[in-house]
Every structure is written in structure tokens, then in C-alpha cells.
Image 1: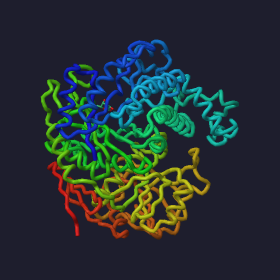
Image 2 (image 1 turned 180 degrees about the horizontal axis):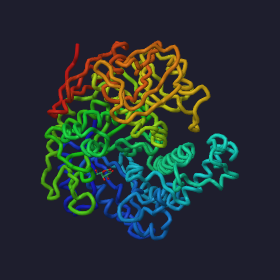
Image 3 (image 1 turned 120 degrees about the vertical axis):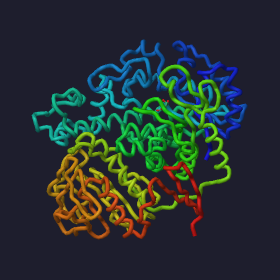
Image 4 (image 1 turned 60 degrees about the vertical axis):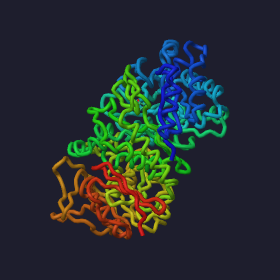
Length: 621
Ligand code: GAL
């Protein structure tokens, strides 16, 4: 695994660049990511390009022996462009423009902006496409950051109508598929369909699902246009993009199909603070991040891209500026995060950023250097990690144990129709992942249609739409299976299947869900050392009780090798379900000590201690 850093030469005096580059090399960094926000310097006025700055920066970094990842600058269109095309900005859900003055102020559906994005991509690729120092390209920056995938603009509406026509053929088919006879919502033509925001009460869930799919497709299409230009003008270079944490606004499998390497931006402390973790975990892991945050994304994004090529394009080096509270990592954590990425198979990890910038929005965001260019604590840890990596050599092939199915549309559906507060397919997946990791298992997060051969255990936490491929794969699968609530409960247009939930999974699960309840906190089925909460499916059929509460209600069923979790996959309940399934699968099933996580690759076992920030490796017998 290579190490790198995100660098913004446009922020610093040119006289400093060579020293920065030298210090990067001395630290053991070999890659540098630049350019993704530099449009206003590259093209200060419409059509007038000034390559001086970037040319000299590329030369300086290349001469120092650094390999360059060049970004296309389309996340930050300059002021003159927005003034020329004011309707290129996205409109938020309330219909308000998302204006200039920060970043990502564009609508994916705006034809004029798409042309501009292609034009600037072409210009940068023509300039640096065959430069020997440029080894890789990053398209744009964090699609969807600041909630920017969905736009409720006239361009989005027009694009959505065309997308619908393409998808359904006739408006009658759409009316039928969505059940628009309900509340007289029928349309006479695609031109009558509006976007699903600004309705009096909730819009039809099928309407929202179609809009989520459309919005995702627009991102994929926007990205693909850049990829095509880069492939033409810079052959042989890897193309990547940086995905985010706990972010599901577009389908990452679809996006990654056009990339060589999928990157992601790892900010474990910021994510712990901003996402759904208990107050207790937020305090306990304030300086290390919950032990499954980084690994969950490593294992998710590895499974999104062909050949499993992935990297960390941004690694938190110290306090960030954007979470509710922004503590510093425990000494040793930056090194631990680096080595954990390696153990999960990353091919590169790049720290964000080289030097803290004293002005503008991120002035409180740490770097490897302080604003005055003296070393911040992470610099020494990066250097140590570089030495560790050199000593470790190649990571060795991962050991296959458990597969966890995750699908973006599943999360869109639980967001559109949670049915019970907080019932989310993404978080169901995270809880299952955490329960598996607690047993020290290697987990691959996979697409619902991915082959399952070679695993001993397959977990499907919450998969409302089930494909025929998934059914075939599960039927042929020889390991243990765990399936969670709402799986198989919908058809592709959000309708309830004729045979009720779990629809196509009925034979596998050995029963039908005849009633689903969602439960407020405090309602529970209590068993011996576990508590089923949040949700309760009433199942009828041949499946046998696997976990029964003290009141005789069944929280988990079993049929053949398949378990059905009738309560929400969370807390002590899902831990117990997974332990039982792992035991039946012949996998380790005793929980590791608190704060400890492991990863097996090749003949090595890595142990990460999130409470003390220490890492050890062993070669088990
Ligand atoms: C990322 C983004 C970077 C920077 C960073 C700060 O979301 O890609 O440009 O803003 O966060 O943590």
C-alpha cells in the first residue's frame, strides 16, 4: 500500500513547494493528490486558461519523485460561470437555489453545466494527460457531499420525465406500476409528472423511489462523461473518485462500474460524532472512532468495484472542522487507521491535508503540518506507518468468511418509508457488520447479485427488493444464511408482492409475514441475554422457532440453514443471532474483548485495539 497526501499548491507561496515536496518524500509519502478545487486559477476568466501555477506545481512534485493524482475541478465552478448560467445551480427540496460561495453549487441535470464540466475536464486532460508524473485521475470531489445529489430544478424535472418515459414506455404503465388510482393521482402524459417535493403530504413512495433512481443515474452519467474524456486523453492511468462515509445518495456499485479504483474519505472521529452512535459510544470512542466505522467502509467500497481495487483518498489526521465536536485522535490512531486500511486491502491511503490552511471554511481542520509549517502530531505517525508498511510488504490474500449483502435501493426505500422511526437498511447492515466483526470475522460487503461461493455465512440484513439472482445464489449456497426484516417485502415499484413478504424468499425462509409491527424504544421481546427491539414480524409457515422470548413470542426463526430475524437487526438481539449462525457455520463465535478487532489476510492475523490505539500482527498456526 502506498501513502500519499492531499495538497493544494494554490494555497501556498511557490517558494515553499519544493520544501513541501521534499518533506513529503522524507515522510515516506509517494503520492500527492492535487487540483480538484483549482478551477478559478486554471481558468480565471471564461476561455482564458492560465496553466502556469499548475504546470510549475506538477513539475516540482514530479521532480521530487511524487506520483500525482490529478483532480478534475468540477466540484467548484467559478463565479463567472455561475453568473453566466444562473440556472445551473441545484434547487433544494423547498425550491430554493443553492448558490455560489462554497462548493458543489451545480445541478447534475443541467445540460449547460454538463457541457462546461466536459470542457474543463478536456482542457485539464489535454494539458496533463500524458505527463509522466500524473499516474491517476480523480473525477470531481465527493459527489453528493453537502446533500447535493437531489436537485428539484426545472432541468431535473425535465430529465426525470424523459427518464420515466424511457423506463415505463407508456404513462399508463407508470400509473399502473405506481398505483396512481389511489387519491386520483393518475397522469395523462409524462409531461404532467412533477418532482415529488412540495406535495401536501408525502408523495407516492413509488414516485420517490423513481426519483431516487433517476438522481443516482444522473450522477453516474455525469461521472461517465468525465471518465470517457480521461480514458481518451490519458490512457493507461487509473481513474478514481472519492466516496463518503455512511452516504447512500447514489448507487456506488453503478458509479464504480466506470472506475478503476474506488476511493473513500475516512474521518472516523467526525463520523462517530455526526452519525447514529449511542452517547456512551460517542464518549468512549471520542478519540479513536467506533471500531467498525473505518472497516465497514473499507469492506463496502472494496466490494463496489471490479477487481476490488480501492483506496483511502482522504484520511483524517487530527481534529476536523465539520462535526458537532472535533476532538483529536488518540496518539497512535492515525497509524492504526493506516495499518487497518492496509489489512483490509487498500492500495493507497492519502492524508487530508498536507498543511492546515489559516483562512476560509476549513481553517480549523488539522493537517500533517500546522498552519505555520511546523509538524502536527500526525506527521510522525504517517512516517511511522510508512516504515511499518515497508517492513510488512504485501498484505496477502484475504480469508473469506462472511458475506454481507448491501444494496443502495434498500436504503432509499427505508428512507422513503421507514415505517418505524430510524429503521434504515444502511444501519441494519452496519449493526450486522458490527456483530460479525465482534467475532473477529472477515466480512465482505457485497452486491445483492454477487456470487456467494466460498463463504461460510451470508447475511442479508434488509433487502426489500429481491432479485432472481439473489434467490438462485442463496438456494445454491452451502453455508448458513441470516435474513432480516422487510426482505422480499416489495416489488421493483414499491408494491407488496401477491404472496406477501418475504415474497420470493418464502420457500427459503419457510413462511410468510402476515403482520409487521414497528416498536418504540422500550417495547421488546426479552430472551436469555438478548432483547429483540424495534420491529416485529409475525411469521406463519414451517419455519421453526430459533430464539423465543420469555413471553413465547419468536424473535428468530430457522428453516434449513436459513434464519429469519423477526426483530430489527440491532443490539443484543442481532449479536445473538449472528453468534448462533456463526457457530452453525463452523466459524469463530466468541466475542473478542471490548475495543478489539481483527483481520486475517494471507497467513497473518492483525489485531487492532481501539482503546489503546495499538496494532499487532501474528501468524496463527
Ligand atoms: C471532505 C472533502 C474535502 C475536505 C474534507 C474535510 O469531505 O472531500 O475537500 O472538505 O472533507 O474533512
